[in-house]
Amino acid sequence: MSRPNEMTKGPESLVREEIRALTAYHVAPAEGMVKLDAMENPYRLPPELAAQMGARLADVAVNRYPDPSGARLKRRLRETMGIDPALDLVLGNGSDEILQMVSLALAKPGACVLALEPSFVVYRLAAVAAGMRYAGVSLREDFTLDAEGLLGAIARERPALTWIAYPNNPTGNLFPRETILEAVRASPGVVAVDEAYYAFSGGATLLDEVGRHPNLVLVRTVSKLGLAGLRVGVAIAAPGWTRELEKLRMPYNVNALSAAAADLLLEHREVFDRQTAAIVAERARLEAALDALPRARRFPSAANFVLVRVPDAPRAFEALRQSGILVRTLHGSHPLLAHCLRLTVGTPDENTRMLEALAPALG
Ligand code: PMP
Image (cartoon, rainbow, N blue to C red; front, side, top):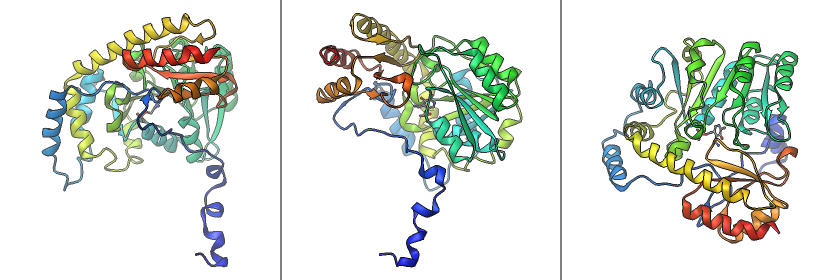
């Protein structure tokens, strides 16, 4: 029990007001459910590879701190993702942590962060946590990019940092590459292109542009490839950025087990390439099935999820939940997302179950 004069020492009075006004990133409990809510790869490791991983992890000296440079994992990521050796790399505990580091690095007093809306909510969380001003630029009603709106906001706000997810979450679409490059050229600050879903984009990437622009930072992750549990993300940028971002990276942010597992598993890239191809094929089937539902409007996706607008999203979400299927309802999170559900592409069987439960919930 706190004494009366200590009542003012709790979080209500001590935590920054703008932090208290935030809502923590919400993750719904999913035990026993078909999990189609978090853009995970639905496939587990093949048993032989899982066994190899077990043996490799048994070898890790967990009494020691991890290699603080992460050199081996960086080499593996360069090789897996085809990253030019001349480019800088910074490791994150998931790409979430990269978003945080980049925000912190650019948080000059009064600095503004710009992001398209709707997009990944952590851009705003990271901006506010870093003490930055946040401004959203609305997408059009069909979630395409309003190039004039974006360039106008860049001219007006002079952002220190602009986030563009490519493909975008939660809408799934790709914005025109040329508009993104125009934003990079027009921006006085960093334009960070978040390619969390690059594996499903059919080769759409700005990786080849990174070395050409000092203010273009690319963010990638191994999460959506099928390694979300490892928490490994990476920033890729022109030379000079590692030196600065390394000052904000906690020395052992990627733990030794994750680093060893990622190094081994990415050596077997073909496993994840096969899984990714299966997910892309299922995405096409899911899109076709959704198109056949007269009361659903499906939006184009270059990611491992599909956004769909239904007549009553809370009702459809609940009907799916009752059938043991967890999806994400975005209704209420942004005006443009009214009655939208985000469906992660699962296994063929999971998708079939989801579609069977969804169809009767649209009436
Ligand atoms: N960027 C985007 C656009 C995302 O959707 C996500 C995950 N939902 C992340 C980054 C973070 O991924 P992770 O921290 O797993 O690398």
